[in-house]
Amino acid sequence: MSGQSLPVLPPEILVRDEEDACVYLPGRRARQPLRAPVRPLTGAEFDARMAAGDRRAGPLLYNQACPACAACEPIRVDVRAFAPSRSQQRAHAKAEAAVTVRLGPIEVDDARLALYRKHGRGRELDHDGPPIDTIGYESAFAMSCVEGFEVRYEVAGRLAAVAITDRGERSLSAVYTFWDPTHAALSLGTFSILTQVALARRWGLDWLYLGLAIRENHSMAYKLAFMPHERRIAGTWHRFARD
Image (cartoon, rainbow, N blue to C red):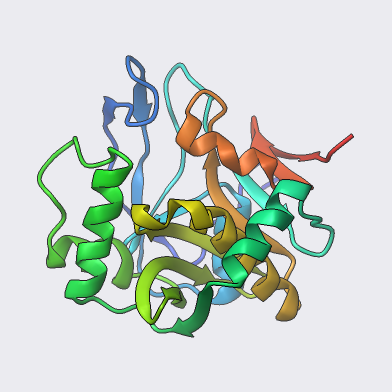
């Protein structure tokens, strides 16, 4: 019938739908219903979920359904049109001279767990509970509903950063990147996004999804500097480019 939305394929099971304190903006309430696809997603199905504003958390998907706030905006970079700013060019050149980049399957081991914890301490992201353990790391990153891989960044032969990345048919999705804070001068977060843009372009893809951009949260606002990009506002993607 006209006016009815088409069923989601594959079907999903609603796992959790409750309000919580927002982890991004103190004093606000958040609602992110968690859904589990009944089978792994194809690349095209994953692209459709990303285009609808979804993110992945382990094998689950979620979207923003906050009761009185719309500060979180899904953001994606147009990889064909992307042009780095001068500061991004400088950051890339500096890191490229010191960093070796390797691709591989998502792995769970002591080195990654230690690096993840070090990143959390260095950026003061570990104040909401006990440090993540092996099961928590595996559940968050290695368990998935879609094909994925990790980008490994090594400095002087040692693991310095890891980017967990999902792959759709026409897009990549940057799930999470963590790095050793002692290498802050290399701007590994920026370098990782530039690396993933280059991968997507090399593979002939259209988009690199960067998760949520939140102008009021410094650690989530840096994504706005990668242009041109699109942000999903009130259910519609809007394009933003430099003047």
